[in-house]
Length: 120
Image (tube, rainbow, N blue to C red):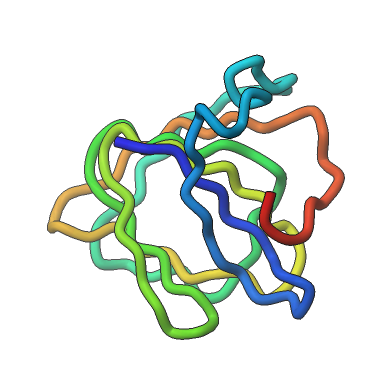
Protein backbone atom coordinates (compact mmCIF):
# COMPACT_ATOMS: atom_id res chain seq x y z
CA UNK A 1 0.00 0.00 0.00
CA UNK A 2 1.30 3.46 -0.80
CA UNK A 3 0.75 6.90 -2.19
CA UNK A 4 2.22 8.31 -5.37
CA UNK A 5 1.82 11.05 -7.91
CA UNK A 6 1.84 10.86 -11.70
CA UNK A 7 2.81 14.06 -13.48
CA UNK A 8 4.07 15.45 -16.78
CA UNK A 9 7.65 16.69 -16.86
CA UNK A 10 8.77 19.82 -18.73
CA UNK A 11 8.93 17.76 -21.97
CA UNK A 12 5.33 16.57 -21.54
CA UNK A 13 6.35 13.00 -20.66
CA UNK A 14 4.44 11.31 -17.86
CA UNK A 15 6.37 9.87 -14.96
CA UNK A 16 5.65 9.09 -11.32
CA UNK A 17 7.03 9.72 -7.89
CA UNK A 18 6.36 7.94 -4.61
CA UNK A 19 4.94 10.24 -1.95
CA UNK A 20 6.13 9.86 1.62
CA UNK A 21 3.33 11.39 3.69
CA UNK A 22 5.83 12.52 6.36
CA UNK A 23 7.48 14.74 3.74
CA UNK A 24 4.25 16.14 2.26
CA UNK A 25 2.10 17.47 5.12
CA UNK A 26 -0.32 19.03 2.63
CA UNK A 27 -1.44 15.53 1.74
CA UNK A 28 -2.34 14.90 5.38
CA UNK A 29 -4.19 18.23 5.60
CA UNK A 30 -6.28 17.21 2.61
CA UNK A 31 -7.48 18.37 -0.80
CA UNK A 32 -10.73 20.06 -1.79
CA UNK A 33 -12.74 17.42 -3.68
CA UNK A 34 -15.44 17.89 -6.27
CA UNK A 35 -16.93 14.41 -6.63
CA UNK A 36 -16.26 10.69 -6.40
CA UNK A 37 -17.05 7.88 -8.80
CA UNK A 38 -16.33 4.18 -8.89
CA UNK A 39 -15.07 2.23 -11.86
CA UNK A 40 -14.50 -1.31 -13.04
CA UNK A 41 -11.76 -1.96 -15.56
CA UNK A 42 -11.94 -5.41 -17.13
CA UNK A 43 -8.63 -7.31 -17.32
CA UNK A 44 -6.34 -7.45 -20.35
CA UNK A 45 -7.93 -4.54 -22.26
CA UNK A 46 -5.31 -1.86 -22.79
CA UNK A 47 -6.28 1.78 -22.92
CA UNK A 48 -3.96 3.54 -25.38
CA UNK A 49 -1.98 6.73 -24.66
CA UNK A 50 -3.99 9.32 -22.77
CA UNK A 51 -3.39 12.00 -20.15
CA UNK A 52 -5.57 12.00 -17.06
CA UNK A 53 -8.92 13.65 -17.91
CA UNK A 54 -8.81 15.74 -14.70
CA UNK A 55 -6.65 16.22 -11.62
CA UNK A 56 -7.89 13.38 -9.48
CA UNK A 57 -6.95 10.70 -7.03
CA UNK A 58 -7.40 7.11 -8.18
CA UNK A 59 -7.54 4.61 -5.32
CA UNK A 60 -7.42 0.93 -6.20
CA UNK A 61 -9.98 -0.96 -4.13
CA UNK A 62 -9.24 -4.40 -5.60
CA UNK A 63 -7.23 -5.88 -8.42
CA UNK A 64 -4.17 -4.32 -10.01
CA UNK A 65 -3.49 -1.72 -12.67
CA UNK A 66 -0.36 -1.56 -14.82
CA UNK A 67 0.73 1.83 -16.11
CA UNK A 68 3.10 2.18 -19.07
CA UNK A 69 5.11 5.41 -19.27
CA UNK A 70 6.49 7.13 -22.41
CA UNK A 71 10.02 5.87 -21.63
CA UNK A 72 8.73 2.27 -21.85
CA UNK A 73 8.87 1.59 -18.11
CA UNK A 74 5.90 -0.05 -16.40
CA UNK A 75 4.61 0.04 -12.84
CA UNK A 76 1.87 -2.09 -11.29
CA UNK A 77 -0.31 -0.45 -8.65
CA UNK A 78 -2.32 -2.73 -6.39
CA UNK A 79 -5.14 -2.77 -3.90
CA UNK A 80 -4.99 0.04 -1.35
CA UNK A 81 -2.69 2.28 -3.39
CA UNK A 82 -3.65 5.90 -4.03
CA UNK A 83 -2.29 7.95 -6.95
CA UNK A 84 -2.70 11.65 -7.57
CA UNK A 85 -3.15 11.95 -11.32
CA UNK A 86 -1.49 15.27 -12.10
CA UNK A 87 -0.61 14.39 -15.70
CA UNK A 88 -3.46 16.28 -17.37
CA UNK A 89 -1.09 17.59 -20.07
CA UNK A 90 1.36 15.85 -22.39
CA UNK A 91 1.35 12.40 -23.98
CA UNK A 92 0.00 10.61 -20.94
CA UNK A 93 0.25 6.91 -20.20
CA UNK A 94 -1.24 3.51 -21.12
CA UNK A 95 -3.40 1.60 -18.64
CA UNK A 96 -4.34 -2.07 -18.33
CA UNK A 97 -5.86 -4.19 -15.55
CA UNK A 98 -3.57 -7.16 -14.88
CA UNK A 99 -3.79 -10.37 -12.90
CA UNK A 100 -6.79 -11.84 -14.69
CA UNK A 101 -9.39 -10.04 -12.55
CA UNK A 102 -11.15 -6.68 -12.89
CA UNK A 103 -9.60 -3.65 -11.22
CA UNK A 104 -12.08 -1.73 -9.08
CA UNK A 105 -11.26 1.93 -8.40
CA UNK A 106 -12.55 4.96 -6.56
CA UNK A 107 -11.78 8.21 -8.40
CA UNK A 108 -11.93 11.48 -6.50
CA UNK A 109 -11.91 14.59 -8.72
CA UNK A 110 -10.18 17.59 -7.15
CA UNK A 111 -11.48 21.18 -7.12
CA UNK A 112 -8.04 22.51 -8.15
CA UNK A 113 -7.67 21.68 -11.85
CA UNK A 114 -4.53 23.76 -12.55
CA UNK A 115 -1.81 21.53 -14.04
CA UNK A 116 1.19 20.98 -11.76
CA UNK A 117 4.25 20.25 -13.91
CA UNK A 118 7.28 18.45 -12.46
CA UNK A 119 8.05 16.67 -9.22
CA UNK A 120 6.99 18.08 -5.87
